[in-house]
Image 1 (cartoon, rainbow over the protein chains, first blue to last red):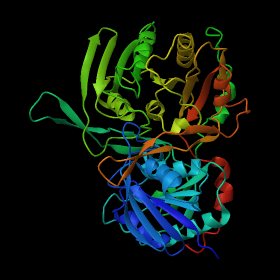
Image 2 (cartoon, helix red, strand yellow; image 1 turned 180 degrees about the vertical axis):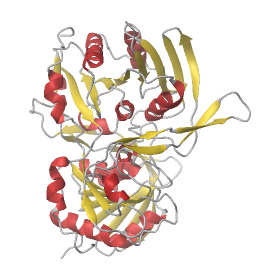
Image 3 (cartoon, one colour; image 1 turned 30 degrees about the vertical axis):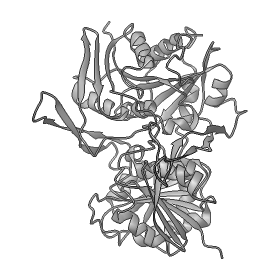
Image 4 (spheres, each protein chain N blue to C red; image 1 turned 180 degrees about the horizontal axis):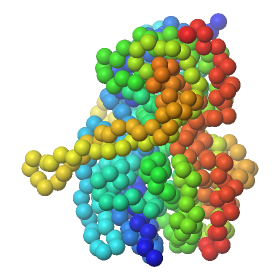
Length: 257
Length: 257
């Protein structure tokens, strides 16, 4: 049987421990092409590079593994791979393993999920993998068999049009898988202020903590993660609030019309 | 009656014609605070600045209009405004007027909509306004009464939790408003390759065209825009594909568990 062609990217750069682990896992099941940023691109969401050109360089070329580093964002990496580097559409994109949670509202900021959504929008089945540990020494060992299983299930079952998977794992031993929804919450107290040593201007570092609006909702990713489960959120490109179209269409737009 | 406090941002920079027009409109109905990037940030999506600090500088201070320029992304601007610049939660955020369409899949790349989603995630009613014309000389005159009407209707009716509005207008005379869903489509042939004058490396400029998968679907933003209507898409933070949770939960995860 022909091996699947698997495209890999991330937002921590091609040299991060998480992507190295993901590459090691994916080469056991497919032919792997890596197109990943040349350095950290955390919090890059679906950002595109539009004010300057981008480029890519080969890092490694062996029979079933090619690695390219790219000067752009995670989304740029996927676009460049699909348009110019690959000579066929891949069977799958996997992004990660991200060092840090992409659960709940983090999905909208995440470069890992930006790349995943980009592949999804181009009709490539796509999975973002993240672990709730920012450290470079994050322990992926408990997560690995889940990553292989979820990847194999995705290759076998396929994904609906416009839908990808946002997969997160807590640190440490794991109890199983929960297919859940994105929890409702927000980031609070987000900046630390510092005084510039040679001027009047203050400057600000992004920081803060995540506030979960529904910590007891068992059908959410945050609940699953807090209770030792791997969370899978089917995530879609269509951001329309379909359930509110009718009511908003009843607003009074006559003054403009 | 107390005037509403309106926060304004964009992704083209505080000096762009589109935001100047939006400021002029909003000062007719509220007290306005502008926190906008110090230069172009197109295609910045919900990107955050995490690898360096950010800052802001006052540009204008008058009784009902304060303008700050910020070194960060559109999303950073909203976070900084809500956390450190404003002394109260604003009644509304408006973002734009963007020079260029943010309909269909563009919503996931758009800095204008990134800022709008950021406010929405912080429970501030929020609207992104865009016109389908990239030029600096874009003619906003037909759009203006719609912007005022939609803003006033939003202030009057409020928006559901986690839902904001993505409003786009075609060029020229307008026929009215359509409340619609995000069209399904993708960008094709996305890069132009150039040869570096002093090296072997090629470099790539992001370009391409939008391919609409459903040009005849009258309930979409692309259809509305192509037929002379202002499109309003209620857009939500929750990207969960709720309708697919049950089916994916039936996959075989036993091998990992």
